[in-house]
Structures are given as structure tokens and as C-alpha cells.
Length: 116
Image 1: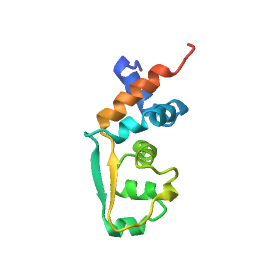
Image 2: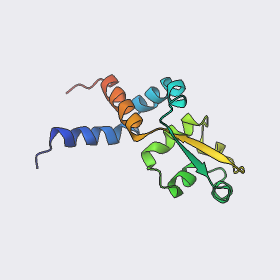
Image 3: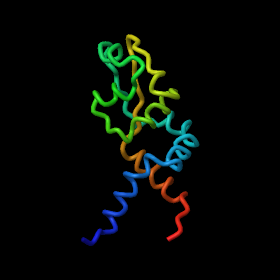
């Protein structure tokens, strides 16, 4: 089966979210990510916050946020581990847009050195 260039690009961008290059790009762009006006604001209902106290990834999964976005959302919201998520009354999370994720993925892909 022949894979198209777009198919290869989509495969690369979906794989990029689990790499050290992705984490480096996110960490170096945290201030920029936190000031993006386009970011979505997700309000975590109190019952869900209590249910998933100490488990940010569980709450994000229940909110139907794709898994590849979890770590980045955690960092954008000032958390260092999923355990830092506290079951407080009113919790709002800033979620970068999919376009922002795609832009950063392109940056991460271009910073990787590949020998082929």
C-alpha cells in the first residue's frame, strides 16, 4: 500500500505528542500558550472535580478531550502531575485549540533531526 504525503504528515503529527521534542516545545512556549485568547475555557463541574480529585487525566477523558492533549493541558494550567488536580468547587481549565496544537506540532517536527 502506498502512503500519501498527507497521510505520512498526519501520522507524524499524531506521533509527535509523545516525544521529548513535543514536551520541549510546549515548555518553551508555556507563557505564549497561557496568553492565547483563542484557548477554550472548560468548566469542570463540581461533581466531576470531586470524582477525579488527584486524577486530571480521568477528568479530561470523561470530558471527551483527546488523550494526546492531556499532558499539554496539564502544563498550560500550571500543574506538574495529574495528581495536582484538586476537587475544588469551581475549576476552569484552559484548553489550547486544535490549531494551536497543530502549529506547535509543526515546530516540534521541524526541530527534530532525522537521518534517513
